[in-house]
Picture 1: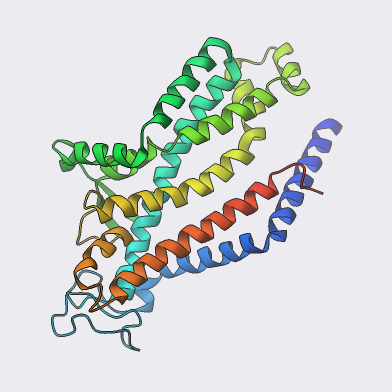
Picture 2: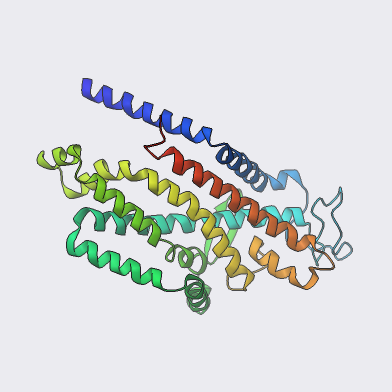
Length: 309
């Protein structure tokens, strides 16, 4: 009982020190504040402005930013602020779920490779190197084109998020991005498992008869969460950029559903006549990715044992 109490106190102290180290990173705190503001705005946009993101107003096309329309309107007279926030919903949803797919695959492969080592490790890491050898953007485009064809393009999942129903081709967007983003996570998890699996407490659990699955999940994985959390935070930013790129090329989520990528694509024809239609979604991508990267930098420092004082 005393040992368990000491462990819990030590664990709580470690998490407190990690949080303190994160809060010392001013840019990470700044990124967290910006992301909190963005999330609040995309969640409560329907309560902030009265406009529908898909209803055109042909009498108010390409109106410049004003008090009535803070971000102006697009080529169909739709309020840009409303569409930008709704587009942020979709982009963030795709980013988070694609990250979850990538982290799940990467953690599974990295954990197996790091724990078993030998031939299993060599095979899985050579497979990872093989996956990394292909230019990702071309593979993304190829996979997106394949998944656009029936039966994949006819299969959509109804997703209820933030009080709104989205009919999104998840297999074409989330899975395509997720299955091409697991390699770095696998390498990080493998390295952590190689380092942790020979620790004394793992050896003790093994001697006491704990099974392989229990050792991996209960004893090693919790101590490898630091690199996984950092990779996950950066993976969201990477997935948002990938989704924006695919949508910009016309291979991602299609209009009238707004995403920052397809808003940029639609702005090409009027980029000089109405530059705000391109600047605003582009700036939102930049601001979101920059904030997430700052958060990732802060998490990296926070989970670095050499920096925790």
